[in-house]
Amino acid sequence: MTDREVIEAHLKLSLSNGGYARPFLDDIFKLWQEEEISPEVILREVRGLEGLDKPLMEIEGDEPVPVWIGDRETEYKRAPSAMKEASQFVKDNSPLRGLWHKHYFINREDFLAPNVKNHAAKYPQQSPIMAMMSRLIEGKITGEWIIFKMENGIRTYLCLAKHAASIEEDLAIARRIGLG
Image 1 (tube, helix red, strand yellow):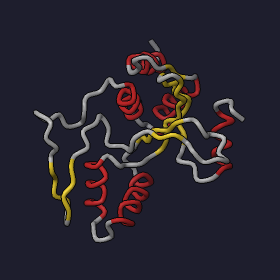
Image 2 (image 1 turned 30 degrees about the horizontal axis):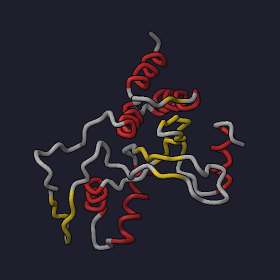
Image 3 (image 1 turned 135 degrees about the vertical axis):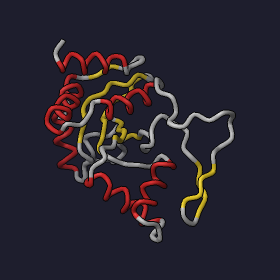
Image 4 (image 1 turned 90 degrees about the horizontal axis):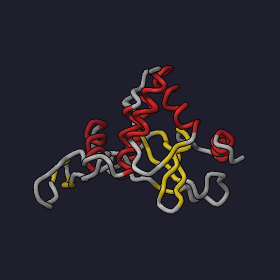
């Protein structure tokens, strides 16, 4: 089996009833080959979306676990991922409107800075380390995107993309997946 076939086999095991487009597999393989990022980073998020992964923290009973973070108490998010929940693109002028995205996180500086900045806007007194811990515990970490469509409750994973900041970037993503 080639490396690509191994990754594809693991991708298929990560799906319950969803599917994927060729660019999605290509992007996972490229991320691994060119940036040495494990495919597991993406596959864990896919398994979470597909309902195939256990929560990060399994706890006996139904009681939430309070955690003291600096000057406030919060609760652990009980989910298979510490990333923000998947959400739909809703901007009226975006060519991605109607598609969905789920964040995935790679532990690199260019991923840490936006998370710390997002958190500091709400809690400016927290150190960068405490900010990342808070976002991790609350399941609010952001990162790059897994883009997918959902029809009748079935997901089709289309591609990976950088967090777009403009309509031009959205258009480039749309062209990659055959929408533009």
